[in-house]
Length: 152
Image (tube, rainbow, N blue to C red; front, side):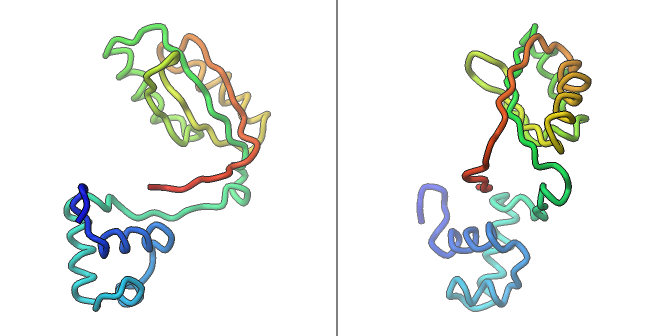
C-alpha cells in the first residue's frame, strides 16, 4: 500500500475505470487479475470511502458545438468572504463555465469556458461573466489545442 492507503489492485481498478467507466465487474476483474467477488468488494469500498465519487459520460464537444475553449482570469473588486460566496454562487448558473478555480496569485479566479465559437464566447463574456458579482477585470486566453485533457 502507498501513502493513500491504496494497493496495486486498487490503483489498477482506478486506472481501468478512468478510461472505461462502464466496464462490467467481470471484465474489470479479469483486467486487474482478481476474481469477480473481491473486485466488486474493492470497488464498493472505493466508492464508500469516497475515492470514487461518481461516474459520468464524456461528450464530444465538436458534435455539441462547444469546441471553443477559453481560459479567463477574473479579478474581483472585493475578496472578503461575502463577495467570494456571492461570486461562487453566481458562477454555478453560467452553463458555459465548465470549471472555476479560486487562485492564489495575481488574479482571483480562473475559469474554463466552453462555447461554440469566438462570437458566442464574446457574448458570454460580455453578458454573463462580466456581470457576475464583484467582477472588476477579466483577461482571456483562447486554447488553440488540447494537448492533454484527462481526469484524475
